[in-house]
Length: 115
Image (cartoon, rainbow, N blue to C red; front, side, top):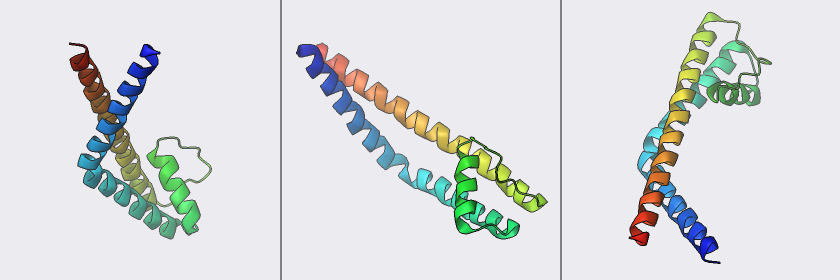
């Protein structure tokens, strides 16, 4: 029973810290997402894709999944796709950093409660 309470407290501390960290980095996070979406829509316009395909391509490329079912043919669109890829790497790093920071805060809170 005690172990369950400890896990619950740590989980709660993690999510509180996660939301605090997301609140801090939200301007950067939303800016990166906005750049990705705008570039994806621009690629869709250049390639003649529907908006849904352009957004799908944006997030598949940005999350570095890259299924290959949609590929830009124009040089301009390919260059923009590289920027989306780099933006996705920044986005992934940012989310990982926020998560690690939240884990660190939760672990420190738990350690302080033990002492």
